[in-house]
Structures are given as structure tokens and as C-alpha cells.
Amino acid sequence: MKRRDFVKLSALLSASTVLPLSAGAPNDKVYSIGILGYGDRGSGLHQVLNSMPGKFIVRGICDDLPERLDKAKRNFPTGIQFHRDYRALLDQRNLDVILVATPLYLHFDHAKAVLDSGKHLFLEKTMVFNTAQAIELNKIKGKYPNQVIQIGHQYRYSPLYFKVKEMIKEGWLGKVTQVSARWDRNNDWRRPVPNPELERKINWRMYKEYSGGLVAELLSHQMDFIHWAFDARPSSIYGVGGIDHFKDGRETFDNVQVTLRYEQEGMVGNFGATCANQYEGYSFKIKGSKGMVSLLMNEGIFYPEPETRAELEQVDGVSGATRLTWSSDKKGVKILDQPTRDGSFYAMEDYYRCLMESELPYSNIINAGKTAIAVALANESLYTGKKMDWRPEFDLG
Image 1 (tube, rainbow, N blue to C red):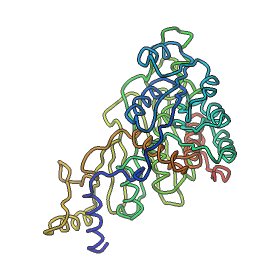
Image 2 (cartoon, rainbow, N blue to C red):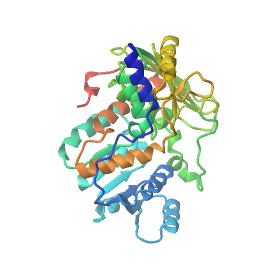
Image 3 (tube, rainbow, N blue to C red):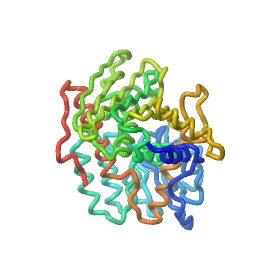
């Protein structure tokens, strides 16, 4: 790179945190939301929506577990209708949007029902459970051109991840060949069950009939960002794992490692998670010939390779140049000047823009469908021991 290129890179890394979304969206309509599925995610998104009173208002909540509905009724005694049957929620006339946060195995049926009801759809990730559902939902979407459908891969909306995408696109990392991503924890991932008959309903993540396990619930976020940032999809997928720590009757693995080969990009992605050690927690490294980006959920650091670092230091030392913010160990440059907010906030901000302007969301059925297919192939490889190849019918459009 020439000196002017390093000046541009320095300016990019010195820029303040900005939201590259929703700036032009007029704020003259409040959308009424119904939440389908009121577990941790559904109730958490309710809090996010409540922080945007000029844009969204929750007017309906549905969950088939009485305990969750009772808690919601105590917290919101007025202004909200409550339902045990999702069809009653869809029939509620004063709703514009249904936010689906139900277990993964229900996503396809609920998404289709929402679209058939004529309402807009916000569908949590992972989009659907298997490849056939991803292909089918992609076909169905054409019947509903006036309904805005967003999928909940929120890192596509974070100012931090937007900036990293720009760095990749402009070549500041050089030739990227390796991605190393982890999402580790040290707990059993269980939720308390008031009645043994509700075990599979409440702890659905533990059972293969209902869940995509660690790959769907955690690693799909990082996979999706790589697919977005590089405009890529894997050519082949291979995974290994097992129930290696918690011998408690679960069926989904508590320890996984999945390798995605991106043949066209000349890149290998390594995505892993364990339930038996929390040291690394969320870790996301994108490694290129000119530097590496190391990401957390809300902040990141660019670690330049020696030649790139030397040039950046020279630019940084020039009088009048924008000063870089180096990391505490002086080995890297902070990508943003301050941590970002929860990615769900940015996702809902831009969903509002898309609703107002009838725009296609950044996370939509086509690209989120490809990520869902990658997750399904990864799980098939984990449980069969076979390498899975991407097939032409998986290239949704």
C-alpha cells in the first residue's frame, strides 16, 4: 500500500462510532408488535422495543407456557393482549408486526403463518431448522412482496461489525485465509423445569428433534458475519464433537468444532464451542496478510502485521494527522472509540427504517437462509461424521 492508503486506514480507524443505518428514516409512525414466544429472547427483545417508544409498541404477547404469560401479565398489566394460542395472536387486528422468538423447530411453521396472516415478520435466528425449510421459505417469500421480513442476525447491524466489513472490502487486512471463532461457557445450558413433563419443552436446546445445538444457537452469528463480510458461502463443511462433559440425558453436543472451507475465497473458517470452559468466552479473529481483527461483541482491535504497523506508526506520528487509539498492550489499534450498544438495538432500529421505506433488510431470507443451511450441514456432519458439500440448490436467490 502507498502512504495515502495508510492515511485512509488511519482515518477509518480514528473515526467515531457512527450508526450507518436508519439515519434517513422518518419517525412518524409507531408500529404495533406482537411477540410470539416469550422466553429469554422474546422478553429480552421486549425490553429493546420498549427503549424505542416513538417507533414500536408491544400490544400482544403469546406463549403456551402459563408461567411465562403470568409473569408478563404482572409486568405489563395494561395495554397488552395475552394469548396461549399463536393463531389468536395472528388474528389480533391491531398488530402490524409479529416478532417470532420460539424454539428453532417451530420457526418455519410460525414464519409461514405470520406471512399468511398479512403481517410483517421479524424472525429470530437461526432462520429455520433444515435445508428443505430454508429452500421452501425462500420460495414462499415471493408471494408476499409487500411484507418486510427481517431475520435476527444482529451483527449485520452493529457499527463495529459494519466497520470491519468495510476494512475487509477495502483490503486493509490483506489476503484473509483464516477465521478463528469461539463461543465458550462453563455451565450446563439448562433451565429449571417446574414439572418433569415440561423437560423437553423448556430445555428444547438439549434435544436433536427441536434444536440445532451450539452451532445454531451461538456459532451461527459468527458464521453469518463471515458470509456477509466476504459475500461468501462455504464449499464444504466438516464437524466433530460429542457429549463430553454433561452426562445428563441431553442429545445435542456440549463440545463442537466445525471447519468451513471457502474454496473460492481461499479461506478456512474454524468455529468452536464448549460448555466446559469459559476462558475465551466470545472470541472472533479474522486473519489476513496485512493484519488481524480481533472482535468481541461490542468492541474490537486491529493488530497490524509488522510492515503495516510500521507504516501506521509513521502516519500516526505525522503532525496534524488523526491520532489512533492504541490498545493497552500497544500491539493493536482500537477499531471504535467506544463500545457499541447491544446489537439487537441496531437491528430493530434498521428494521424500523425498512418498514417505513419498504426496504429489504440487511439480514433477509436469502442470506440468513444460506447461513441456516450452513448450520444444518454442520450439524449433519457432527452427527454422521461425514464431510458435507454445498450443492447448487442451496444458492438461494
